[in-house]
Amino acid sequence: MGASPSAVEQAASELEAILDRDARVRCEAVLAAAAECEAVFARGASRIRAEARERLMLGYPPSLRRVVGLSSLEVPMNKTLGWILDPHERGDASRRGLAEIAKLLDYPVLLDDIQRGSPIVVITETSPDESITSRAPDLTISSPHATLLIENKVNAPQSGFDQYAHYLETLIAWSGEREHRAYLLAPELRERPSGWSGSLTHAQVAEALRPLATDPTLSFWDRVVYALVVNDLDSDRTADRARQIERLLEEGNRLSEVAVATRLSQLLRHPTIDPTSGGI
Image (cartoon, rainbow, N blue to C red):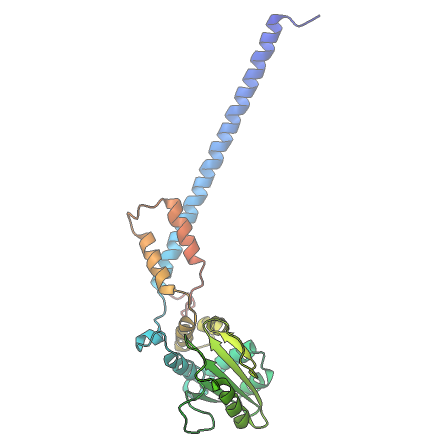
């Protein structure tokens, strides 16, 4: 015997009430979750803005190369590298930098001499054999048991057909019985010259020296010097990012809070250098 119409209506009414109640519960849950998401986003956006303001307070290192008016040439970079890596100029701080370079090159003989405190000679823009010539390696480093030649190329090819061969011959003759290495340094990774040990990029050297810019065991000014050098070696446009952060923090930039927070977060992902170790 089938259910009466009244029973069907009652069952339908009960089902409708259940569905309505469930819908309200789900709606309330969605609204609660939305409110929580909004609160989380607000806290996150506030934190991102605070971090962005701190980044602007820290600022960014000036370019030593631009200060001397030669923004794209090799000489100021070579002089700067030769100065910071010369123990006669910066003492133990220079040895720390030389050690990082030796580790980067996996050059244990040179690293051992550096860490033992052996005499280190750094020569910049001058032939190591003291010959009078218009061509001289950019940077040569010597210790009792090792020598290292680094030729830096910025937007320039080999000078003449035999520049690299000539430098290698000079290095070998100057090194004598010592182990010798020669590396080509450039903003981009270039083909290794014949007979040379390898090629390096400015970014690789920057990453090797970057920890020294924030190392609390070094003096403040030594950290600052390394920060300047890393900034010049790293092609990343730090100053441009700072200007973008400033514009995003300005009132009335016509962007939504979501867009501002998202863009600031992207900009803040790039590493910065704080030689004060958070003391700003």
